[in-house]
Length: 400
Image (cartoon, rainbow, N blue to C red; front, side, top):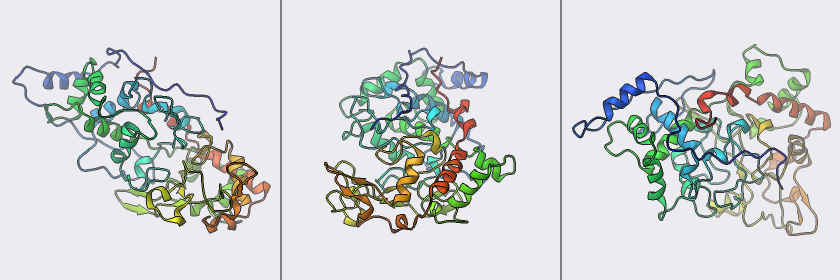
């Protein structure tokens, strides 16, 4: 199923001279680290000061990838640069566009070679706070670890980098008028800093800055905005003050989902993977072979069809929905939950998902009528953080 939302261009292929004007401070740093043969490696760059909304302590940062301003800016450029892909056609932003809360508007993501991914591209806002970073794979726990899959994965191909072309892709960056100096600024102390490990570290540093908590919901919590009656009723349903929506039991914490919320102060919640009754092929509990969920990594039958509950921040901007992008509207998502699952008639997926033996018992406890569903949709739309979408710190540096 395709999305009704507009397709976002897959990335930019900037000429080597495209770059913003460097500040005087940056020029001084360049002069200091770009001297003659006796200059030696550049000094360590200055550090980083977090600017975070209320309720968001700094995220965990790996000891081997400390934050600094030059690294974050380098990561922003790499994130938006299609030259990182095998054929120069797809940037990270091609599947994670800022205007769509770092999603792509497609049912499923599409790689640089045109191969479709079996899953929907997840949003990246607040990813630094998530204890798990994949729809079904519980193993990657840092942005650095997770990035190996889109860069180097072969089934499916996303960016398409591999052993045969890695050096050639790096040479594109080495030949750029800006990148060698930018890597030197970001990774002071290294004599040859332009390599894949630092590409990954720089992009991860940029992604850690993608924090969203400026929605009308957040403003209402601080008394600077007022929700409508319908939005307030939806909020009460969501957090369990009335009715039986049970939303917060899977979509809780400051990030409203995405598994456990982790920062320097500790952890809130536990990583959550759930089967919501989307399939029950031939009554066996099975999901499609290409999209079976957590069982693909654990081998446990009871993990069939379990996928991570995503963050619902900015959810009105990230259609289509669910791990396979098969539901196009928030109204349809709420109706599916209220129905206790999905039913397929004759065909390859024939079966009643409501009777899936591995379905999370919470799904059958959801009791929301049409008005309550409408109120919940109204509340979910208050979670859109419009200022973050236009934040120049996250914008494409190659855009004209």
